[in-house]
Image (cartoon, rainbow, N blue to C red; front, side, top):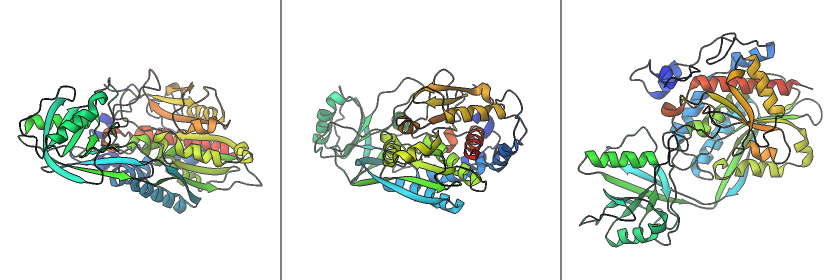
Length: 464
């Protein structure tokens, strides 16, 4: 289907055959002029002088460069792990470069357990992530190798005559998980890959760390739905599929928020914040969730760094959002009441660039369901950009870092491209190994999102 807004990944990428995803996206960087109608807009924009300063400066091609670092060079950024810290250091370095006073805000988080699936004969597709979750009650910090053997459902496995040295695949059922793993180990298996039940489209099951095991003698991992499909497709076409399974326990963890600030004018100036979360779930490169909101924040910060404002500008990139808004809740808990009182608006950006055709609505999501300074400013920006017909809200929804601020009375909202029927209608690559630049990023949508948030934040920050 080609979406009504014209923001189609097929249209964006189709002209550059044989190129890498990053090259194709760069070549197709949105090139509309300041006064051109945006894709899906109902009329040409009516921009003021201040809007033009933002619109002429923002570049999704620059944002894409950051996204390539986060989702392709670093990959999954699980809260508190080394990969998340690499991302935090990179983001802090960028905000430093833009001239902001930047700091990391550390906080403790729970242990994590991950796995990596290695394809010893290069049979499996390499355009998705092959990280999975590891059972904390299985064998950890080891690497094993063996041929894959699919035994079907764990509730009624069909065991081959010789399982010694094999990596066993089985459809997972939590009620029989411990007994199944024990039986596989007793038959000589070196590892177990548990396969999730398929979810109803457009949802797809994510990778998971299997629970309910105690001192299992072999590694046990939980894969995502797309990994399950690809493993079984490979087993149906080759005579042998040797795999390596590596598990890692990440313990005594510290996650970090990244905060960049430029002080406003006068004593105790108001605060305007633009934010996103930079961590991911296990097994997801997080190009859209929430690499897109992260790079939007960086690009808006870059452009606003050169423009005067009355308000203090704060740019926040939250750690460990995926484990329950841990980073933003920690940050808000550290704010004294006089700091909370200074906030004019928090513009949280979570999943702002999906290329999924049906995601034609730009949702304004408020934890209270009520309008506030943030939603009002973005609606006004949408009207000036001619884009208000594709915007819906404010609509009641939490589940992102705006909630942490609204819980204590700070004006905040989350902004996101999602399906037309409901803000719960998210793209199929959501929380999956397919949340990559090539499979799940539209530079058109990213550019429109940056223009909406940049012009809205600047309008609020200019006011005395």
